[in-house]
Length: 169
Picture 1 (cartoon, rainbow, N blue to C red):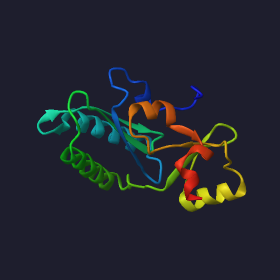
Picture 2 (cartoon, rainbow, N blue to C red):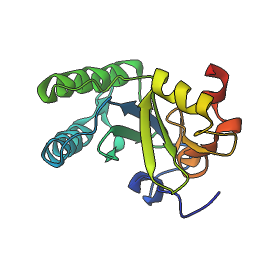
Picture 3 (cartoon, helix red, strand yellow):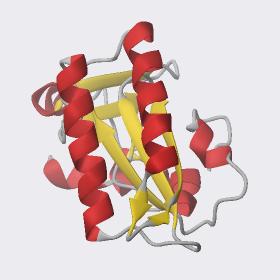
Picture 4 (cartoon, one colour):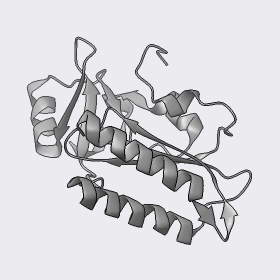
């Protein structure tokens, strides 16, 4: 993998097991700097208090590109349970309402254009870019379906031809 690719800070954090679980939540529009700072502070507070069966979770949060919320839990100390995952979803729903954004935008696509700039589009817009050839087989697309830290480090950016995105078009 090209190490010059823009990886989240979470990909470089030390002290987390490579199998640490990752959840990525995407919103349709970038947050303003003020919104992003507010959201990061709220996320950090949530991570400090996040528990599963009364055990503190070793968690980290990050807002990437002002548009993607990453939650990471190192389950070598305490595993995220269904209830704790529900807590995170409810927290993000509440944060979404306070910021008037939807962090559950499942069909938002990100890619690197020919100049190396990060682009994003809705599914129909992305389909048009694919059809026009602006997104080709080797275009790097962001894989927000990564499930753990190792995948975040090595499969966050994938060529379109190797990604789940291709199956949609």
